[in-house]
Image (cartoon, rainbow, N blue to C red; front, side, top):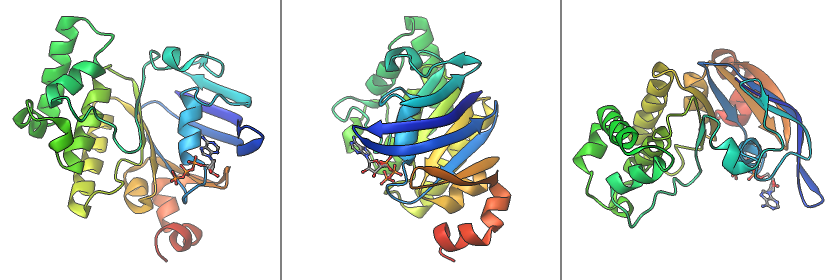
Length: 233
Ligand code: ATP
């Protein structure tokens, strides 16, 4: 569904990704793990065309998107939930969901919001609450719900568990599992390697701009190198 082939990305003269190859197949959850500064966010942003890859190829559902502007990529069936959630804090839950359905017709927006409320009853309970006054976990749910409004075939999530309490993290990972049940392909970037690999069909380990390991989530969890570096030994 999504293929990055030998992707290099630069910030000015500095190369942040040194030839990364990653594949996400339809219906999978693929987790990318790595330490601070490994280039995880850069990789996701390169898929979105900001920054663009300086060389290599990015193919989405058979179509080369490497040189497309971000606005076109965002209309190609991908939705991104960025790091830090970035909901519109002054707007209510419902208004945030409307913003996510920006390109949709009124009736699609109505159906979309109903669907998000079915998935996340907690958001329905808070439909008129301003997003900025909600807990971190609720804001993360809203960010995922807002991304769902564009009816994506693939969802990309950047560190959805960041700064959340363990119980809330568990809920967020359950929700991500539900996305797969909905038929949405998921590409997940996480520092919480344990949860991310447990959920994933396959995983990749990124170290200083290079893929060091790739395997099933299960095998990576059992890998002693991964355990020492990312799972606290
Ligand atoms: P974190 O988990 O801390 O967000 P990360 O794995 O997502 O880390 P990136 O944010 O992709 O890592 O950063 C990879 C490298 O690229 C780092 O060395 C970082 O300093 C550099 N970098 C990231 N964004 C920029 C930018 N806009 N301009 C210049 N260098 C950047």
